[in-house]
Amino acid sequence: MQQYEQLLKSNKDWAERMVQQDPMFFENLVDVQRPAFLWIGCADSRVPPNEITGTRPGDIFIHRNVANLVIHTDMNMLSVLQYAVEVLEVKHVIVCGHYGCGGVKAAMSRHSFGLINKWLRHIKDVYRLHVDELASIESDEARLNRLIEINIMEQVNNLADTSIIQRAWKARNAPHLHGWVYDLHNGIINPLIEIPANSKLEHEIYEYDDLDVQH
Image (tube, rainbow, N blue to C red; front, side):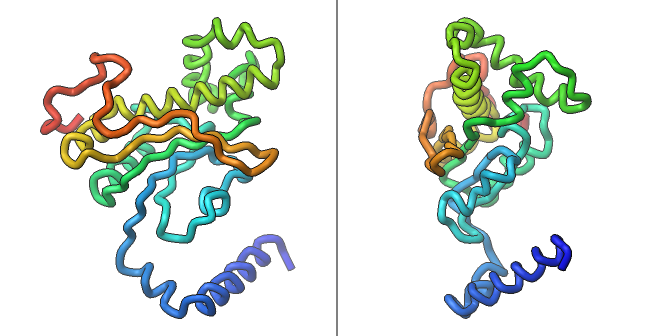
């Protein structure tokens, strides 16, 4: 059996188990999705959101990219964010990275990786903003993991700076924003930052005063 054929077989086995546990499982998912969470995570194959949180299909709306970035010119991410916040009305948006992230490690080097350089440039900018703290860390591994934490927190702040989030805060006092880091060594998620709805932003220049206008 080919590897891809094993995926199809495993899918059938999983579907059968779900029906055995709950005969209406798939029927209940067909017509509506009402997840409470939007998850913006790393594309790393070792960090599957549903598995590591013990949730089921329908519980989490998911967007993943290299190094869990929130970039204001990324129409893919912004489209997911707007749909999750304005249509699904999620209550929480979570940015979840992980220790040992290859994307962050690549951004810390001076090596050229081709097209992805342009994506990793955003992490290099985060490094530059926190260079004094990072330069004081002697261990390469500890420095990498600290940048991973800082990057997650910066991305959460980037979320708060969007008009999408600010408009939802004004309209329904939600969603709350969270930054988490996953430890590959023990499977545990650790919270790093939380920004409740309608919190004061890092700087007033990011605050929009006319949220009736689409930005």
